[in-house]
Figure 1 (cartoon, rainbow, N blue to C red):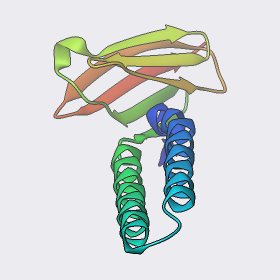
Figure 2 (cartoon, rainbow, N blue to C red):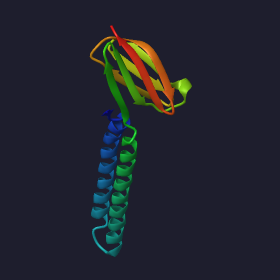
Figure 3 (tube, helix red, strand yellow):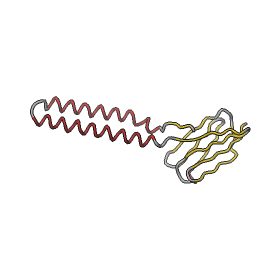
Figure 4 (cartoon, one colour):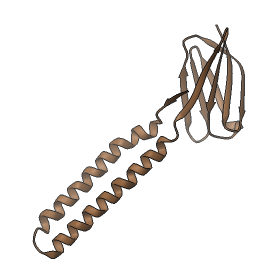
Length: 140
């Protein structure tokens, strides 16, 4: 089986890095402004605690979105190629486009994945049942 990373995880990384940088700057500013006294120590401690809490939460969020990997398998059978894939969404929303060597699979809620094959193909049959898409194609 082959998997590909979900694009949303890739898009979250710059935002996460920026958010962590801003939080670290806030910690440094609090430490510099409240460098003396018990209140300064308490504020810096609380800020550091909140920083570590949000780092942990962001990591959980990234791991959960990473579970949405596109899982598929390509089967070669003589003059035919089949793709079996997990695709979310209702049956009416699942669409398959064949463009030469590229197979584009679309579904509801913005799901779109592309599979590139070594041969040009023509769609013969497609079926979708319980979240599993089966595509049968003939080599050209």
